[in-house]
Amino acid sequence: MDQYVIKGGIPLRGEVSISGAKNSALGIIAATALLDEPVTITNVPEIRDIEVLLRAMEGIGARIDRKDAHTVRINAKGVSPLALDNEYLRKIRGSYYLIGALLGRFKKAQVVLPGGCDIGPRPIDQHIKGFEKLGAVVEIKHGMVMAEAKALCGNHIYLDMASVGATINIMLAAVLAEGQTIIENTAKEPHVVDVANFLNSMGANIKGAGTDVIRITGVDKLHSTTYSIIPDQIEAGTFMIAAAATKGDVVIKNVIPKHLEAITAKLVEIGVGVEELDDAVRVYSNERCGNTHIKTLPYPGFPTDMQAQMVALLVLSNGTSVITEGIFENRFKYVDELIRMGASIKVEGNTAVVDGVEGLTGAMLSASDLRAGAALVIAGLTAEGITTVENIEFIERGYERFEDKIGKLGGIIKKMDSEDERALRKFRLKVC
Ligand code: EPZ
Image (cartoon, rainbow, N blue to C red; front, side, top):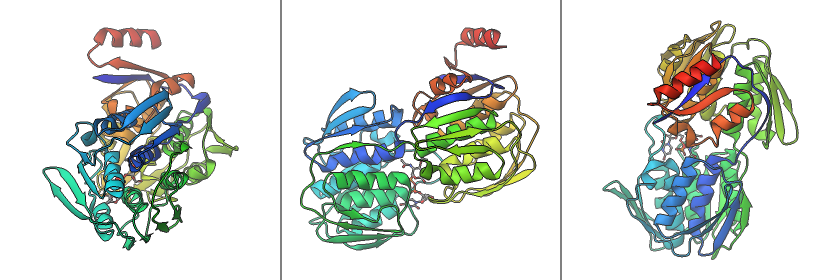
């Protein structure tokens, strides 16, 4: 298994360019299954989850042509609605978007239940409620979701919570349905809007994406398109926090500043310098940050996917901070790892109380999920001495060339085989 080996204490300085948004790309790539013509998608992030979904789509009959590392041409003409129990589909959460897309196109879908990060139970009851309101019969049998409809007819759907996945999945099932579908209490994340814009570029009729109510008027047919994915707001936020935590000065390029407003506001509140440019943000700090209170909320609130990274910054703040996880039930598993580095954190239920300490010391750590892994890397970059982070396959699911981008900012980080003691000794000798 691979691990990251990090030598902390170096302020990150320079420029980093953000890749395409993972959570947009998953929905958009799955949405190409709605069409029997080729579609070209650019600014696709080169990350494991995307590779897995592309392989899964090939497995159900799509033709995938990689034009370059970030451009893919997908022709779903030969796709079957029966996505049999495919080893790839079980690995990622985004695979469930194939249910909505295949149901929308074929009025039938059979897809294995999704996987995804272990941050709490990941039910799909709201997805199923939406499919049923459109006229589908949905069963879960033998670990598969089986959906079928004589016809899909527009309806009025009210989500119990602003679910990103359910909002996107119901859109996919509704774009070719007869009549109008209204979805209320929808998620407003940038990646929801990106998927809606992609569908509209194929001839769908979706209005209101990015608000609490999305109106979809079914169309008879979709057509080919070329579409570029928006920058990843969470990758951008991760580098913003890494710049602040290491007391560096970094220009994060290829971003949409509006998508980062909740993160920017919080960093400014605790004394970090943030300068917004047209398609970049500059983040700089040369002192300990202040403390704060955070509750993670659906967009435009503070993103749950930035909670762990923010705690990795606040463990070195002046004073006490309180972080409440408002979305998932089990998203503080990384806290024990930060405590091994000398952090002072108490978790009670879905709230963490963080007392800022003078500094962290390097330790051997283990990533439990994608964003927690990124937070441990940030902590390692601030710590005195050497930190190792294992299970980095979680991180590679959502961060393109993470160690390269950090290295180009002056951070000392190397990917190594966990078993390679000799390489680890050599690294220690070289950097210590
Ligand atoms: C998406 O997950 C993202 N994943 C997550 O990002 C992100 O944390 C999450 O949205 C919230 O922003 C992808 O887009 C692939 P939800 P999703 O449906 O769609 C409950 C990352 O790090 N819920 O908005 O699964 C659910 O349990 C990943 O990139 C139901 O109860 O999130 C959760 O408590 C981690 N029933 C809340 O709603 C449902 O049918 C929000 O979930 C659906 C969701």
